[in-house]
Image (cartoon, rainbow, N blue to C red):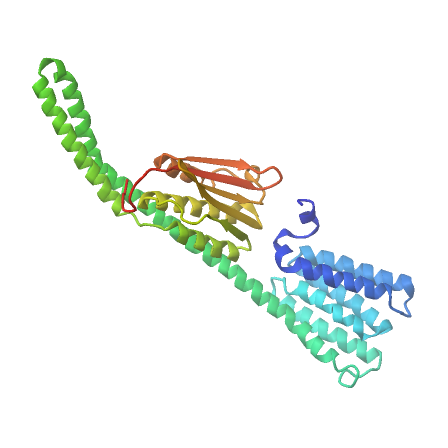
Length: 375
């Protein structure tokens, strides 16, 4: 599959591959079976020029793309002069390439060249473009001249949407980082002193256990009371965390991956086990981090998320068909996922798939609790 992407740009497969193949096959068939004063070798030479121009334009976005389009239109115009204007219908291939250009000026020049090629063919052949049976070519010409602009607007909108999604993602990550820092500060300021107190009381109880059992008992009672205070503080801190629904996160992931051109398939059984608010939020954030990695680094076209459980554990499997972990740089949010699963007492495994892609497995031990149980 990797060799194929050396022949055809990966980022264009989803939008253009099918139409490029269909139109090119029909063009080759038309040229080989049409009668032309150019002869077979002349027609073949012009076809070769067209195909070379098409391939150059396939990989270019600047001046070379415009040159390739003009060259392709020239070959079709010459064929049209000797074999009839019907061959000009395939100018849509060059119009399609032209729409992928980055320059509005290049698009304007190429679109004008499409119209000029039509006019020259009909002028040299001394046929009228506005009389039967040639009237059909006028709307075809107009559509082909407008088509690059439509493609350009569509690609521009897609690019802007991608930038908007990236900006929203950065904002979300910033908010998440701020939330982490706030929780860390709160844990240090409120829970830190309480834990130090428990440590000191434990050391005192150890000293008094043989010398003065009553004093040791008093110290243990104070440790118990202090522990309850610490437990209450933890619950108060955790209750302030923003709850994130796993189902909502999966729905958001589907929309986000669709925008990025990645097909997402989710498999989940009915009646999933009840998770605590913290567990569900942590798993949702792990899924969010995984989706971010797939969009940014995997170059995948498909992704699968499988949710399953048994009496012991709740598992989430995430797999993509991208370049795999060997093709990625360090980091990529993996430490964040590992940290969250460690906090939950769960596990996280990431493995390369046999052919291509990566699989992530999140495993969370199941414990009986109520939905509002925070710890």
